[in-house]
Length: 400
Image 1: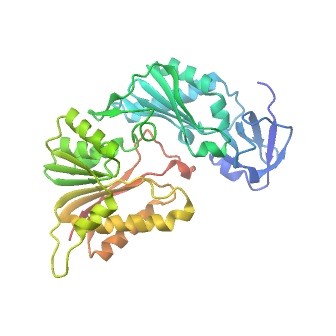
Image 2: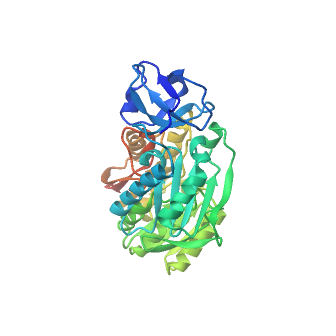
Image 3: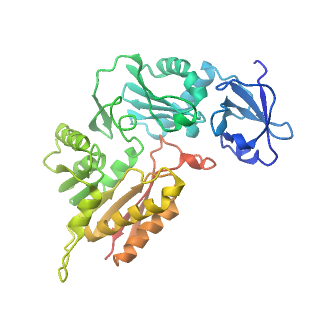
């Protein structure tokens, strides 16, 4: 292994890295031994000269170094193959029946700046760091050897790429992609568009939660808010819900959900409509003076997109979360179940639960907590890397 350029951290900046967090910020660096090209591999040391690890360097990013290993190793195709195989083994162990899942989840799999999603035999790659982006061709070859996909595409329009000095880049990297194609989640068929769809084509992080919530819906009248492609709705219908009504603001999402319901033979119990969910809930939960609202739903699902991308926007986001919960409680029958989710990293689990309980207080609702949800096992959480934990959720029974 060739001698690597060395970077020395300031006193007091090493503890977090020793504990396992891979990000070294520009402000943590005391000295750069020799000039280093952006995207190159460097050796990081603490102020006493003890090795902290090796990683990609980028002078243009607030995250100056993304540590990939805590011991000096060569970052080459063999390294990527070992890491990807280890990540794949974890998925096969924890989700043995899944055929579509996240293969690599960046920091969660000790490959900061790399995401790989598997949709049956098609892979979608995202590289959010300069060092990882420059090794994209190596990574593609490793993925071809390990998984033998029909096609590999990139979806690189991530906002984080701009902080790394990287432009957007979308399109095929290997093989031929026929356009939209069907995949299976828990045995239910969904049509995905990995080049034109949202994120990398579908929300894979809710895969285990789809089934868990579906089991709560048997025989019930279900309202699925922010239904997207119908993930929760179709699982509820398959599990025996009497009726499922999905809401989404996107016309394309509504049409796709309707098509997915038809494909799976569930269109007789699944209906979808295009609507602003806030406005729809407000209109349905409002009652004139001296009139009593009769709640119509046995199960309500709230799975909105993130209401905030920054810490500064958290107060406004919390007001939004509280608003939809106030409306949902008014429409939920006593004895009914609310399944609710938040996918913002900046809103932690205790804060999210406090917002739900505040909405319950305002509506004089008594709740019984029946389940706690997290992201699917293919999105593993490393506690010492808080950024790896973002999806949280609860199921509450409305006692009265």
